[in-house]
Image 1 (cartoon, rainbow, N blue to C red):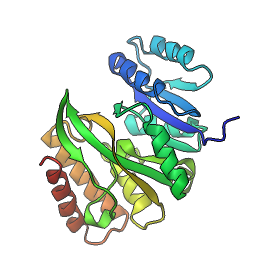
Image 2: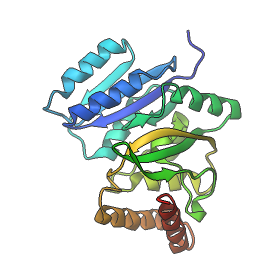
Image 3: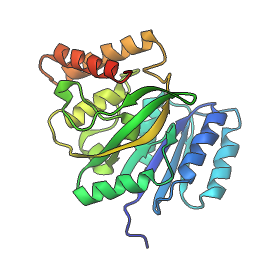
Length: 246
């Protein structure tokens, strides 16, 4: 029996079979020896189920899935978290930098005895780098936060602090990170490497309107988590984002 902690990787999808096939291949190629793959489908009608069944054949006894309507991406991620049996949980919606990203993430977590790990990422437009996310370590108060696609946490963090709030439409990931990190109750390791290549144009970066909505919800998250002088943190966060384009 493997002594490696089990890692549950969650992918959510809905009628996006072409992208799902690419993401599934990324997960299957990871060399980590104790990996569980969870696919949460919103009830697709485009051939997604055929892909999931093929994945079950490619990763025997390591794929778990559910296919039913949901209330959006954060509701779907929450379903994946509840389905996960791993000690460490992360998500994959994009491209790992190489085939041993998860191995390196777990190694640094285990070596440092932390509650989770994060690293750097690039936002990509095709093969062109649009934004460079190199934030290192820091504090929520100064506008810092981990790159969410690189954030892998021990399951006990979700058991202590809860899952993603579905009353946030676009920034539930930010609210969650503020909730667990502002008071420094969760310790993260930092892996100073590019771990994820993320497609630019996601939920919060696809348009100016989406970005402004993300900022509004982000300010709400700060206020609801009792971050004092939330507007200062807003300004620091905007400055950090602008720096990523330089």
